[in-house]
Figure (spheres, rainbow, N blue to C red):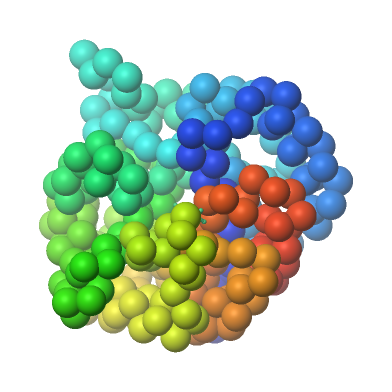
Length: 252
Ligand code: PGA
């Protein structure tokens, strides 16, 4: 049995108030009843309150793009899980490759953020994935395993019952070079077998999203793979008709 599909928009550092207002108006007009799947929007922190209001009477979820490991303290520029809960966030992205590569977040730091999200009652969307050099040298599984090990060791395997994993090959993000469905499926299956090695029930339940140049014209083919349970979408999530088509591709 396949898991309930989930499609997540990662708006990264894009958007303004007026654009968001227009997006939500157009998006909600066309979006179905969400009986068959879930949709979550992750805007920059400063727009969470606006979306909290806009999404209040809807079934669309709200997520942040990162969370700090502490609940409060002298961490200038950071935001904690209790703060995100106050804004009605249900989800939070952790360990996005841009955080890892541009902002130096180590596997251990990502694991600490993941753990804080779970403790704070949020669903972390844990991003994992190899870069081009790692893929070419055959180190994809080794890299993904190390990223998962850091989280499993700190948070425990049971924490994954409250989490989502996103496989995002770094070479596919924002490049137009989507992984083929077979390439993605192979890593998704690896991730699921990794989880099954710890707990079969957890492995069967965890949703594993694919991210990296998901578009309207490739979503359905990715969705057809047995271990691809949804998508984490960057660029195409900012165009209402494309994002709707991606949701539809996943049966939402
Ligand atoms: P993209 O980004 O869809 O623009 O490739 C995906 C992501 O970074 O989550």
